[in-house]
Each structure stands twice: as structure tokens, then as C-alpha cells.
Length: 114
Length: 113
Image (cartoon, rainbow over the protein chains, first blue to last red):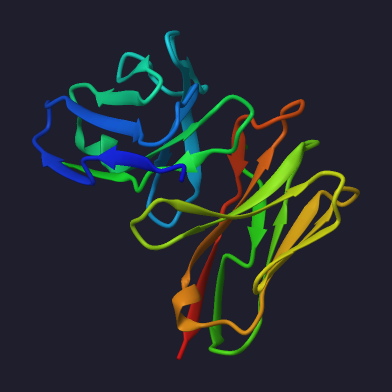
């Protein structure tokens, strides 16, 4: 149980494009979802926390207008990287949990901006 | 810094040997968790140890926690080539339950056949 699906697994696009990444909890209702960014051979850096039906809480230094997060239902959160540039290239990972439960992680999305 | 420290940063051993990874953190915690990440993949939860526990076992994994020193260790016994991965500790400092995780820098483990 507790499967989190993240899509797409890989995306390559041109500079200036906006890219949407989906995170779905397949067999449980996720009251909270988290979005992380990971640079090569580095740890996970929390970008934002989103609770269903409310605005996301962004970590210090993360541009909320650049990284739009929507958590419209208990099973889906999306991260949109707006007007992406090469410096936005990274590995993005989501996680989801129920109230009072542990985080379950998706398989990540490798974003490459040319 | 958001992150704790892990050492070693990289560890290379032969199959059958034990691998020990250490993690230190800075704030008080509710629990500490260890995760594994294969290259280019998401994280797999390995084990959780609560702040009032000192040691926990799961199969070939043994985790210790010393809250006075704000440190934890993960021991993998009788390692296998399939154990090759990055290992991260993550602390949960929330008041009860599960909350935001703060990840350590990670240890890259290579197990050679």
C-alpha cells in the first residue's frame, strides 16, 4: 500500500516553457503533499508543503511565482515550473502523507531545460 | 543550514562486509528516519526510530539513536551488491505525529561483488 505516482518521470523542454509535474496518491488520501528539489549527488531540499484546499507554504528562498503548486484534491498535487530556464534543471520529488502518517515518496521527475 | 551532517559522504566496501553510516542533527526531534535512494529514483523508507528509542532492528538493518549527542547510525550487515545506493537520514521535529522532514546530506554506498 501507500503508493505515490509521479508523472512524468523525465521531461526535456526548451527554455521559456512552463512544465507541469503531477503527484498522485494512488491508494490513500493525502492531506499533505511535499515538493522537494535535488541537485546531483546532493540531498533533498524541501521547496514547499501543500495541504489540500489551501495555499502552499513555501520554504525560504523558493519563488512561489516560479514554482506554482496546486493541491486541488486529496489525491493530486501539481507543481508547475513557469517559464523554465536551464538553472531550473533538476530532479524534483514529491511525497504525500495522511494526517498523522509518514511521508511516501514518488519516483521523481528529471527536468532538463535546454 | 536546513540539513544535518552525514558521514562518510561516500563508502566503498566488498560484499559481505558491514556498512556503517552516521548522521548528526541540530534540533530536538520527534523521530528520525532512514531512507534509501537508488540512482535517479525516489526514496524508499527503511526504518523509523522514535526519540525515546535507542536501537531498532529490521532485517539486516540496525539503527541507533543517541539524543544526547544528536546522532544516529545505520548499520547494514552482510552487505550485498544490491545495497549500492545513497542513504539519507531525515529528522522530524514536529510536536507529535509526522511533520516536515529535514534531510541529511547522505552517504553514497558502493558494494562491490
